[in-house]
Amino acid sequence: MQEFIEIEHKKPIYKIKAPLREHLRQYSRLANLPISYDDLLRYQDLIPLSDSNGDETLWFGALYNESENEFFHQELIKIYQLLVADGDEIPYLRIESIDFCSFGNSRPFRIKVINEINDNHDYFYVKKADSSRIYGLELEEIFSPDKVSYFVDKMTLVEDHIIGIPSDEFIKKNEGVKIENRLRFAKEFVKFNERCFVRLLGDMRGYNFVVEITQDFDNVQYRLRAMDFDQQSYEGRKNIYLPQYFKDNIELVKLAQELMSNQIAEQYAKEERVAMKKRFLAAKPRTKSILRRMKKDTISSMQNVISLREELASYHNNQSFLEMKNMGDILTLHLELKLGIKVF
Image (tube, rainbow, N blue to C red; front, side, top):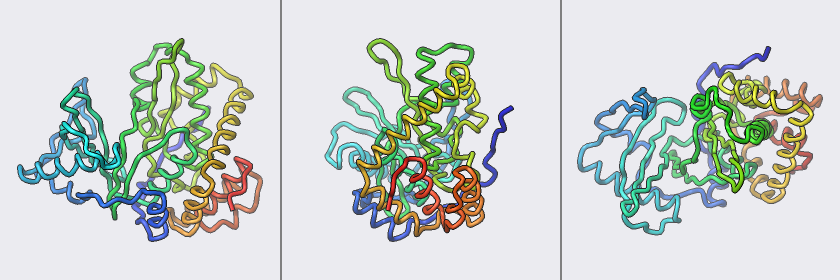
């Protein structure tokens, strides 16, 4: 019987230090934003929001006084234009809503933008910046098949919306239904599971990653994408970096076990490692830059560092892990062993 894991403690916020800011400046991730996260905290009231079925959500509509509301809407449009158009003006945009979620480490604001020409809408997020999340976003940019758009200004983080259906909602919606192209879906979970483990991205419970669905010319294709990066190299238990060990994901594990043998699953995991190695080689200077800063930073407790280095020493049968001083050291050696690369 599979043993599931739980996250026991909320992760603290780690400030962004000067070396990490220098990396962000070098790779065009710093911006002078017209408003900050703290500015948006000046709401007058919060209204609970329900989903399309009338069920309560973790989101609240943020209400501001009239003068601040108009100002925030103007400045949020500028931020959106920076995210999607490098600051070029996009006509006929308006802010439809500003929502707030007190759940999670980043306590995000979700901004809904409407294009009045075609009534098309989009989202972006304003969050409290945290170095763990920044490292996670950078490693996502390097090692995943997808790109992420974000900017940092002091302690404010602005992120583009990652399109997809949260995995827990997708599973609930398709309960008892055989989805199209089930093997492709199972394969994607195996590769996603491997990708998270190789780059030590933790806490991929069902609501922290999405299912992106694409209609191909003859079938449906899937991609699983992380959308929460707070737990980058923070936890001290190896299995927290493997999505297969979360209870939320048991249906995905069962699907993979039903449709493929261990040998086939390992072949798919190997394919993902090969792809990650190619991505590293294509972005080697950036990878070395972010890991060099991570090796000198503190993004977890010493207790977690000791615990993880012991578990990975056992997993890899490599006692060098026991000499590692922080999570950057651990991740670098783990990447080298899993991908067969030399970072430095």
